[in-house]
Image (tube, rainbow, N blue to C red; front, side, top):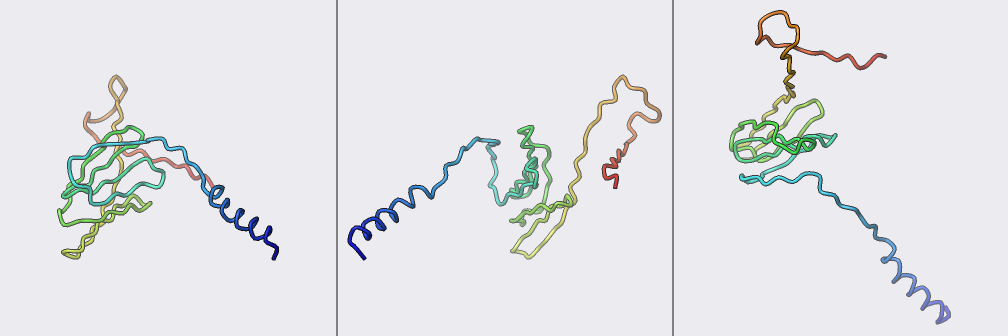
Length: 134
């Protein structure tokens, strides 16, 4: 192989890493200072809610509202958390060996002040949405 060809190949190999890297734009979406130790984190697939496991509690954060939505008390032995798309949180512990599955359902307050209502003022209501019309 000619000497010039070796230099060209060496030069080309040295330049490849320069062009192989991509750049990224980074925009902070959510940041919160937590006073407790963070043991594990799970995120809902749409990114709207973040579940933070701390000793004795799971904190549910809303990324959109940038606030804590709720605090779920749990056993202090749990060290892992995972979110399932069925709305369940799976908590795990290795010492002692434990697993707990919690169904998490979001409850919304609907302001009915100055609205026509029938029945007791503190009665609960269930709203069902049929959105699959196949």
